[in-house]
Length: 369
Ligand SMILES: *Cc1c(COP(=O)(O)O)cnc(C)c1O
Image 1 (tube, rainbow, N blue to C red):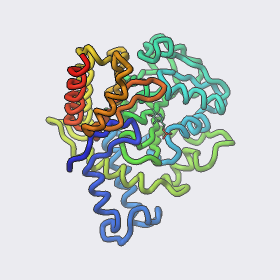
Image 2: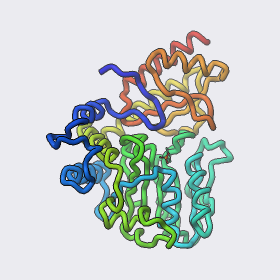
Image 3: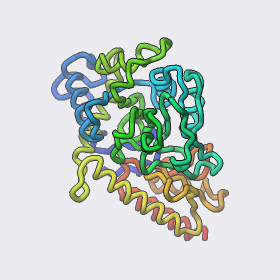
Image 4: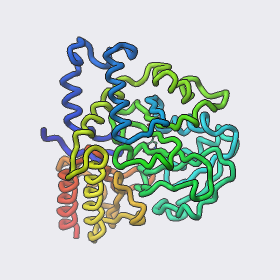
């Protein structure tokens, strides 16, 4: 099926096979006579969808048995409150600020944690770098350290998660992996909790994924809403209240799609990682040699998923975007806080989409040289 290429940062493109299967099953899911949206979350049909999705995700991300997978609501922004409500234990929280999203997390945590300290910040560089972990000011006895492992707006990504133990800290690491979940493997030996909204790389908005080490649950502040207490959610298999059933279903179809993907001898997330490296290398390579386009992020901190770029002559932005849309290249406008353009190359974006974008960028460059 010939659809435009959608470069949206989120909600974002979903693999067409997933959309087609959801369409085919819309009125009657596998002979049940019901749409998934109409099913009881406690019925055997939905339970089978849920259990398959959880098992597939555990396999895809190689989540160790001591971690619980929670399917929640509220999005990444709600987790900015839910994490400190569950994990801060009236102690100091450390934050690494590398862009808009971790900045928001830091502000929200101040409402709930006894104290929030910024252990490191990339602000002085305009959020184009990631401060070297060896330079981070870690608090003694911090209840956790939070970072955003892929900054969707500034296009900054941790290529490796910090080893807090090696840096002399016992604090568990909390990562907001909303915008690169399932694009690369996760080193769970370095992580205590990971959270992310589904709408960037896994499915529709409304589903929030939390993967949390068991020993970190059960210490929520008394004011924590029951529906947001990780222990309560985990003890009820994410069904303390009605979970986002449609989101879990579509994410489950996406997990099946991911499991079918292959690149050489790699499958699943490893295959997607190869593809994502190739796509990002291709686009950064083109931008870097160009006289018209510019990406300002330090090479070692560049995101594979979200690539902000600028025209050296910003007065041509609208013309660039209008021409892109005409050619079926959608949602390339940069975030308003950064300006310029942004191409998000999530798992569902094929290399052909990147090639089509580059072909248009070359054409535009020839016209405006
Ligand atoms: C999109 C995004 C969020 C916000 O998610 P909501 O679902 O809008 O709450 C949080 N963190 C990151 C890194 C994001 O990309």
